[in-house]
Image (cartoon, rainbow, N blue to C red; front, side):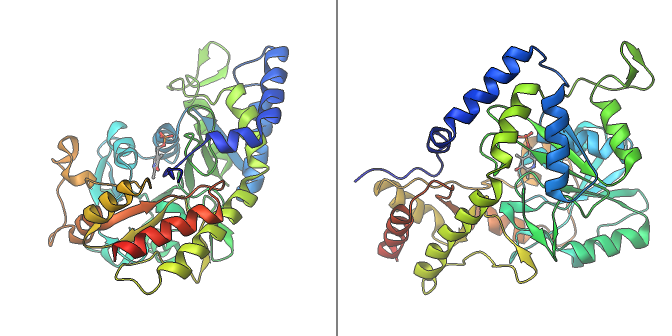
Length: 366
Ligand SMILES: *Cc1c(COP(=O)(O)O)cnc(C)c1O
């Protein structure tokens, strides 16, 4: 029997190859490669998709976080509260602009920032919170935003894994002061290379992000403020426009695959993901948790089934971030997650039959 990969993009690109080729040809013939009509159109279409007024295309999700934090007014030495159970990029972005990340424990049901742990983490120096919508499920935004509003804190959502996810009737990326999206190829909406975007409803934040991504230029060659080069390019924007039209159908297909997993794994001694009552998950990953994770992963590998671990080492245990003080009582749930989580194959082109084979292999293990 054929092996089942944890992830495969070639199937997706086969199905839309003609449209990608057409987008490529259009950009090459027009001859504009930086900040032209494809980026402008994509920004308009992605903002409309997220239900916000503005989207600003940048070079990656990491830089969307960096420029998003800066555009919202985060300054060097400001403390930024976020989680340790996330892609390193979340913490790296805050650290790299000179801010000071501080870790908040997660809620193991959602795998996202536990709002009840904010009170003991906040200090006079806290300026911002970055909730991460990990695995495609929204963080519990209402209490986080309430906490932030009472203390005048900035909220920048890390929505890199959650394009299209809904929390209480509204898309993620539309709740905070700003949000950062990644279009890394494996994300639910991925380019054929790097890319990212900042979304916001605030015109001054959008304007500052636009300045930051291109040397602070209001006028070409004249910097009115400091900035860098972090632009989404025309080719990637053209490819992203093709894929954005299919994002909802692809997310729907991901949920259909998870129906198979939920149905066939329900009675086993493992923890399945939360199916949110307050919104719609887009299952960037389908993450189960079990104490014998490593043995299960090895069993699947022997059966020709790929799986991944998101993430094996919490950020606070990585050498570059070991200097960050951790909360009293530690980050036990973040550590537990890193030891027990396993991401099963999930991508829109995975067939029902393949999902059933994955589930059957897991059942054999138990
Ligand atoms: C992918 C990712 C990022 C970084 O995005 P890049 O485009 O790879 O720079 C940030 N945060 C999370 C949660 C991610 O998954």
